[in-house]
Amino acid sequence: MVTKAIARAAPVFSVVLLSLSSLLGACGSCDDGATVDTSAPVVPAEDAVTPLAEPWMRVIPFQETPEGLETIRAAECGECHTEIYAEWQTATHAVALQDLQFQAEWNKDDKLWFCANCHTPLANQFEEVVVGLVDGDYRRPVTEHNDRFDPVLEQESITCATCHVRDGAILGPGFGGESPHPVRVDPTVLSQQVCVGCHNVHARLSPTLVCNFSTGDEWAMGPAPREGLGCIDCHMPTVERPIAEGGPVRTSHVHRWPGSGIAKFPEDVETVRGFYVPGYQIEVTAHRTETDEGEAAVAIELTVTNHRAGHVLPTGDVERFITMSLSLQSEDGVSLWDHEERFGERWEWHPEARQLSDNSLEPRVPRELLFEATLPADQGGADGPLFVEVIGQNHRMTEENAESDGILGQYPLAVETMRTRVEVTAEEAPVQD
Image (cartoon, rainbow, N blue to C red; front, side, top):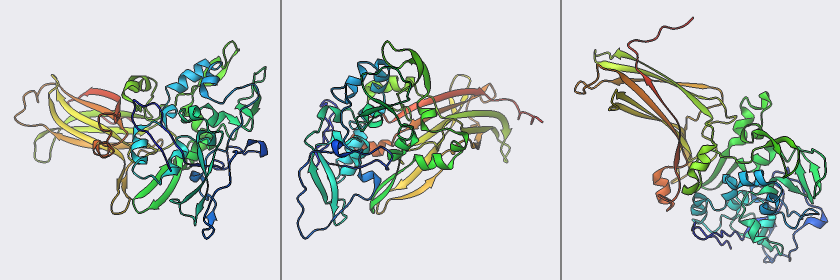
């Protein structure tokens, strides 16, 4: 029912099974002229077909090509919108289908057709669509054939048309002027509402199969909405430039979406890291002290603040986590004490998937951590200058999980986001009034 390819060397990743409807009701709808040309589904008479009740079971309806265009493929958009197209090509959205972690986990069960709904969100991208479930069982989908399936568009994953094509028109900011295609303003679609369709999904399909993405909820419960900030404000910063080749300079948005800053493929690591800006900041102080037993030690205070993100950090896939690696070092870099602090969720998956803990960083809330590093009596240089180094890293998944998925060594697992080194002072700094 589902055909998939996972080798990076083979450029075609194919999805043959998906659903057809709206994305949280916010992505527009099709009139009679924008439906999939299909044959009637064949279902045993004794079985009842139930509709697709959950938003994550449905994709954006089939979209007609706007007048003046030959296709709704990104490459055609890029003929005029060259800078935006080049940005999209470096985005993780552009390879959401080819993502090795997604492919590996998806291939574990051939009944997980709905997982592709967020990695290729348009009905145009699927050869078969799901129109219902037999007796409400997601493992028994009822399908119809899509005669207008576009395999090239399929490979574009989350593409221009995902957000910008609805009902035969291009959704834009409404600057006016001449355009080779119809343009319509729709602030609802071009908002966080289109983002949370995939970045806010909760489903438990079996004791060990859980889909849990809470970014939308985190944003809604945090300070960002009260500050008038949505997804676009942070993840698509403004830039002054021509939106199309030869056009006037206007306010546009960057189309990169680096996410956690971890590229999907090794060859893209430096590119993605180059335009990633950490959502958190750190402050570290350290001074000499003594333990209760009278041993020489260093007191370290580390404050980590999620100061930029409108959601918790890390967010998205529950396998993601952040580490802060602390090292007390002599002047010549010899490590005298090491510690790693981890932020994120911890889950167990068997016999039943459940969250064990969650110490993710909430927006605008400083997290203060205190450490006491005892100086080893046999280490030279303890009486000389000492330094504390802190290295922050974002992690997509553990090495153990990557090995279980068969992608260890092929898939970037982490990226360094910041590094700082401070000298240890002789005594605690006085408190400022």
